[in-house]
Length: 245
Image 1: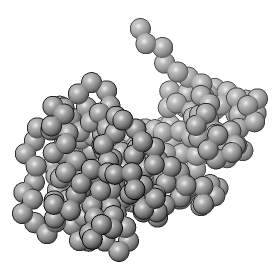
Image 2 (image 1 turned 45 degrees about the vertical axis):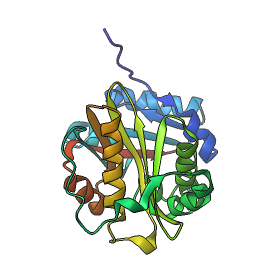
Image 3 (image 1 turned 90 degrees about the horizontal axis):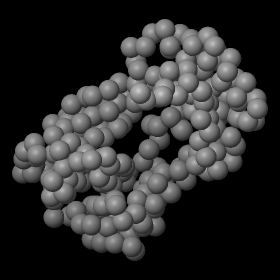
């Protein structure tokens, strides 16, 4: 039998990155007793922030969180599609030839793009997080992806100037995951995201995977339309809540 975690866990990476203690409360602990236990844990560990992710239809849990000082931070949408599904016709307004695997000299430019491409995420919505640290989070994320041997990063360039990127990873079993997709402000609405996504799906097929997953924000309508264009279907709708101490 699998044990259900019913107490907060310390998020070491988040805590070290932001410079203060952050915990995560599992949805299984969203009860009257769990709320008291979470506050006690936060006091003992000198936590400043607690995350909690719940299903969007978990009305009782949502009400419990809001009564106990948790505030809405983000809508988390998970999409998936069979990796073998035929890829949407590339004969559109996007240039697949402009997409190539990442090379080391591209990294600084990709970090620049990442610093401004993800301002719809919860770390920007929740203004308790310093905006410079929120930008650095995504700069570091793509930098680590470029260095990770298990991650393939593709880059869309024009005249040797990177305009966008996408990171692809094989996760558990035969499932692939799109980690980040970012397009510079100057290249929006030019088919860059479609070319990158098409290239990523080709790569996943070459790895002989069964499923591909991607997560985005409820407010990011453009990303949702992009994934739907390539046959992704919604698999989960969840809500992020944060409590600050």
